[in-house]
Every structure is written in C-alpha cells, then in structure tokens.
Length: 74
Image 1 (cartoon, rainbow, N blue to C red):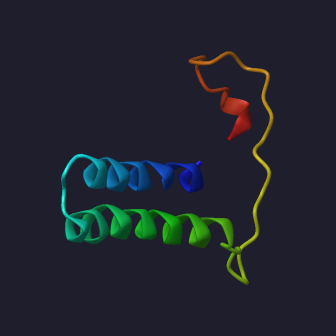
Image 2 (image 1 turned 180 degrees about the vertical axis):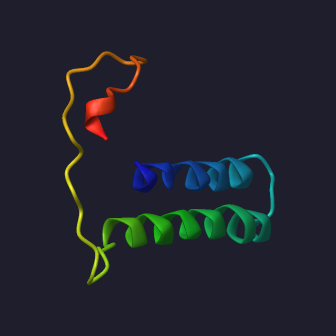
C-alpha cells in the first residue's frame, strides 16, 4: 500500500510543472517526497524479524467482541 502511495507526489510534481510552477519546486518538494515514500516502502517490504524474536500465533477464541474476559483463561 505504501508503494502505491508514492504515485501521489509524482502526480503533484506533474501538476506543478503543467500549471506554471518552477522545476526547482517540483523536483525539490514533490519528487523528494516521492523518494522518501519509496524508500519507506522498500524498507517495510524488506524488513526481517530480529534473530531472537519468535512470533507466537494469536490465540483463537470464539468469544464475542466486547464480552467479559473468562477468568479461566488467565
């Protein structure tokens, strides 16, 4: 989803250029923002879990949402 969000600043840069804005503004503001969004997307997509961390699956429960906790679960 973040990768797709990088399209928006490129569109903004195009709008700046086609409506009389300067190339410096388009590149300096919007393309740099798009680059940061792309960098964030790459880092999120290539993230690896830490060496000592173990993910535990969430306990499945058939309780209703908002129901009082069952004391036997503790």
